[in-house]
Length: 181
Image (cartoon, rainbow, N blue to C red):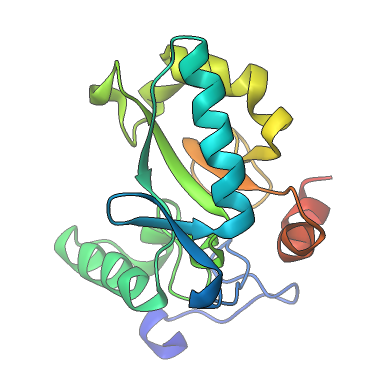
């Protein structure tokens, strides 16, 4: 795969800005929406967060959750080819397979049910759902993975949140946390 990318991992393990992540054991995944799964602890926290948001009149919609390396491979390489992008250009918006937070089962892309036109767009940060997440996500152990100007060099993704509510989740994302400090 590295030959296909034309890149080699950095000394800290990152490839094109993304840290390597092992794929979650499928036995740890539970359904959170039709066709969407998360690691069981993250799923429980996400469902509680959606309930809390609903109580405040916000419709947090799951756009994408767990993605296998095979799916990530298709997303990365096929879209890269379709858009005539280099691996470096594609990696600013999508992780190479084996380097996506989605593969951990702890990451989720969220949208605002009242503003579907903002899905997977930086315009999401102008929605009521994003404002609610900014004010409340930490209470449910979710953090924004790629804020503006993040140290990983990944494009700003206001829709992409990761769960850090267990020791295991903290261990998984510790390299990214260390880089952002």
